Every structure is written in structure tokens, then in C-alpha cells.
Length: 250
Length: 378
View 1: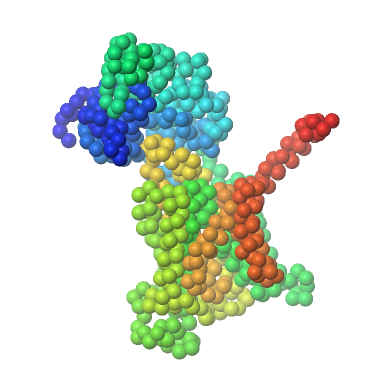
View 2 (view 1 turned 120 degrees about the vertical axis):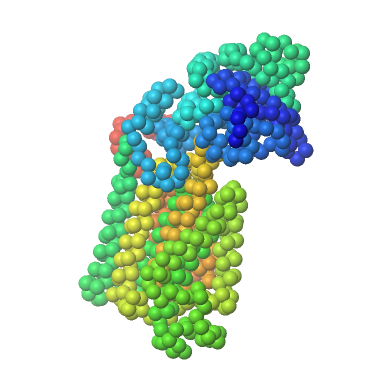
């Protein structure tokens, strides 16, 4: 590959996706910098989830460019390869391995060789254990270490999934509605955690909860009908006539 | 926590029971006087050996269904292919003792007026080669089948249906005489194995003990696989496939690896089955056979490794008894059993036994604790 055409960590240009004639993404363009946190808002069907699907390789765009670190073409890679590049994704409903205990959930996510042979012969090292300890501390699940993930509360599962993302040591985290179904206190704690993560890694947060987005205090992108409607500070975006019309309501 | 727990308490119990069977069955057959009620008659030894080979087959299905969520309804095909590989070796051992006394060609080829041995029969007179084929033929079929199915992300009921189609297609192919595997009669009239007469009771005892050893080895292998990090990834795929994918695991590679390993285990089970039963024919490919394996696993307890062994032994013992007493009702009994287990014992016999054990232990620990039901009654 030649020199990077963009300094941005994630660069989407003119990306379009159609499902049976329905345009889920319509010439979407977006750039996210290294260690930047970006909040994505927008009404249902605006294309937020489809955008994440394109970035993580689940959906191939019909046209457009999707570059990671300026050189990696995301449209040509599959999910596993993109995860290896350093993009982690948290689903809207917390998705953890319910039959495994909390520790094993983190263990499986640790950045290690992921080939079948390597895992068959792998032995847990002291270093891995230290990393698990640190991650569990960070997502406040140390006390739940040997509980099955399926027994955790909704909020704890959300945090466990964030912990799994961190274990991958990604450069970019895509986080879909982290505050959904959480108590006010948990929501505030989650905002703190994400701000902390964003000091070293880029984070894209999709969220409906405007209080939460205000808490994050970052640049906001509003999507509508598959393309960017407005971008800027939350105040600027909230003041935008079109945003008020299609999303926030008068 | 760095130590793998391949040998947990359940595994030790399983291995002890298998060791006991490997000792008791020969002793009861050989050393106990035929007049004694404890004598095990000669025809029971290969029957028990057949059950043991079915238990190994059930184990292979549990490895993929119980731990990776791949419901194969065509595993009988891998079993039958392993059986055919063994059968081909046994056919070549007959030599000039066949009805037509041809030194090279098996009887059915002489009957079909074939002049020479087809290329795919070459080498099967050599035992190590035949044993290699027992592993390789099912393994390669599973690899090729899995390569296409898993890469195209065929899952769930669609995968089950195409595995069923695979075994059905193989059954139709093996029924044809020009396939070169004896058509609908299959391979039979075996004389000896490695020079030992196949009908003699001492050979049958050795075959029984080998089957038990193979089952124990297969069990340990499966335990080793499922307690490794690889095994944890399998369970992760079973419970949340896309989550596993987004963590960076190539799910299709994991499925392919475990599916191939499972097919090879099934092939070994088939190779042990054939000399003890004395025949292999295309009916082993019948879709109903493959469904029956799944029932053994479900009855015993899916995802436990020990459960499917229990399930295979119990259901087959039941089948032998039932088809002797009330042959026309066996299929109804089997269907009823499956419905009963699915509805009332979703975790199978072993799961139900574990639940009961937990419940009893909790009762023992706090005998003074009043039962909520009796409280309500007061």
C-alpha cells in the first residue's frame, strides 16, 4: 500500500449500503481520530447499527471507502481479521458467554493467538492472570470472578462486555447503547469509564440517552436516513433545525 | 488455575467403570463355570462390544453437539465409512476361502464378473493401511463437507438437514453394485482378523477389551479438548457465535477442526463395530440411524461426555430387550423416550441425577430448614 491517504484512525467516505432497495446507508462519510471519543445519535433506522456492521466487516458496502489507520481496507476483510486489526465491538444487548464464568469471558477476549492449534495447546500464564486481575478491577467485577456470566445483573453484563473489549486491546471501540437498561448511578459510572478509556483509545458510542451523551461531553454526529445530518458539539447539534425536526422533536 | 482439570471426579468414575468392565466381562465369560448364574454367555460378549462401540459414537456426537452446538444428523455416515474401511480389510483376509475361492477378489466381485481389484481396494490387505483409512476416510469427508458448510456459515437446522442429506446420498451410492462395496449385501462372511479367527470367543474378548480401551481413550481425548482454551472457544461459539467472531476468532476453523476430529472418532467406533457384528452394509447409512445417535446423547445428557456413554448403553440395552419382547413397539418406545426426555429431563439422565444429588445434599446440610411447601400447608 502507498502512503496513507488520511491521518484519521477510521475513515469512511461515501459509504452506501442497500438491502433489497432500502438504503440503510446513503453516502455516509465520517472520520474519527486516534484517541477521540465520538457520540453517534439519530432516530431508529438512521443507519447507526449498519454503520457498525460495515466497520466490523459484518456487512459489505455497495460502494464507498472504509479505511482503518489509513491503509487497511475494511471492506475487504472479515470480522475476525478486523478484530485482529484492533476494532472491538459491544452489542446493543449485552452479549457475553453466559455459560462461562467471568474470568473465562475475559480470558477468551485477551489479545493472544486465536488459531485453533494455539488455543488447544495454550496454558494460562502468570502474565495473563495479572491482566485478567487488572481488567476485572477496572470493570469492578473482581468479586464476581468465578460466577457464571449468565448470573450477572444486566449492568454487570454490560461492564463485563466492555471489559472483554478492553482485553482485546483495540485501537477503536464501537459501543452500542451502553446505558440502555442501566440505573442512573450505573449510567454515570459508565460515562466515567468510557471517558477514561478514551484517553488512550478511540471510542465510538451510539446512544439514545441524551443525558448520557451530555455527560460524555464529546463531539456528536447525528445520523438520519443513512447519512450525516449534523456534526459538532452537542449544543450546536441540538440547536440544528433539521436535528430538532427529525430526532429531538420540538 | 494454570492446571487443566482433565481428570475430574466424574472422569475418574467413568474410567474406573470402564476398567471394571474390561476386567469383569472376560472373567465372567472365561473363568466362571457355564452353569453358574454369573456366567456371561459367549453371544453376550460381542453384543456388549457393540454397545461400547455405539457409546464411542455417541461420545463423538456429543463433542460437536454438546460443546459446539453442531447438530449432525449424519454422523452414522462417518461411523459406516470407518466400518467399511475395516470391512475391506476383513474381506481381503478371506483370501481363497470364499465361495468362489478367488485368491484376490472378494466373492461379490467374482459374482459381478469383475476381473481385477478396483484401485480403491488396493492396500486394504495391509492392516496398518486399513487402520489409517479408518481415520482418514471419515476425516477427509468431514473436512471437505465442513469446509464448504462452515465457510458458507450454514448453521442450525439447515446444517442438520444437509448432514442428513449427506448420509442419505451415501446410502444410495453404497446400495449400487457398481460402487464396488458389495451393494445392498455389504461386506460379510469375515474369517479372521490379523490371523485370529473372528468367530472365536478369545478373539471376541480381545475385541471387547480393545473397544473399551478405545472408548476410554476417546473419552480422555474429548476431556482434554473440552477443558483446553480451545474447548472454551467451542462453548463460546455454541452460546454466542457472532460475539466469538467479533472477538477475532475464526469460528469456521474451530468448527471444522472439531467436526473432523469427531468424524474420526466415529470412524474408529465403526471399525470396532464391524468385526464384532460380522457385517457392514449400506443400511448403516440410513438417516434413522443417525437420528438414533442423537437420541442416545439427549437421553444421557448433552454436553457431559459421560452422559452420552450412559445413554448409548441404556438405549441399546433397551432396544435389545424390546425388540426381543415387543419388536413392533420399539420405534414407538424410542420416540416416546425422546419426547419424555426432551420435555421432562432436558439435561438428560446425568443432568437429572446431578440435580437430584445437589438437592439431596442441600437437604442433608440443613435438615432443620423448614420446607416452604409444608409451611404453606400448615
